[in-house]
Length: 164
Image 1 (cartoon, rainbow, N blue to C red):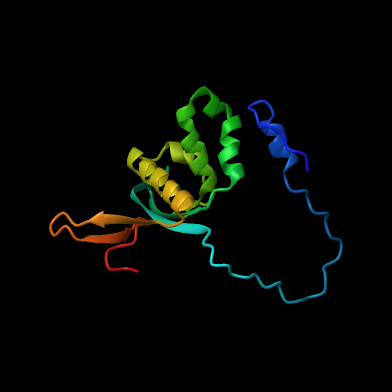
Image 2: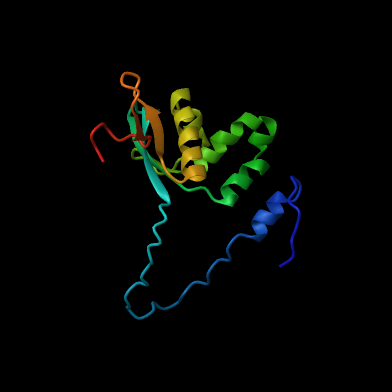
């Protein structure tokens, strides 16, 4: 395989060239067989969270619980060719979050417009959550009690106190 240097000019071409080929349509169903067994390698790829404030949709419903999947290299490259990001580099986190958030409440079609309408507190929470999940591989944070100065870990995914 030939190596290519990625530039702003050829990034879209490279992404399109690496798209998986469409599988040909089958004309007849294969004989019934047990589905292939997926091995669990212990890699967690989706993480639940609870927003501090919650996303309020057009109907006024507040959505607080959601999930985010691990980011791929493509997820991090794609915003670089987005015109909104080129015009305003700060928009990168909106595009990136909209690609990796798989659900917020009952909303499964999360797009940049939804992330744009979130409260700043929730966007900051999701940016930190993204960093923890993709850089550190977990959602735990070491904290210190302000009263006794004892150290312990908390799960930032939003579980209530006393839940595991």
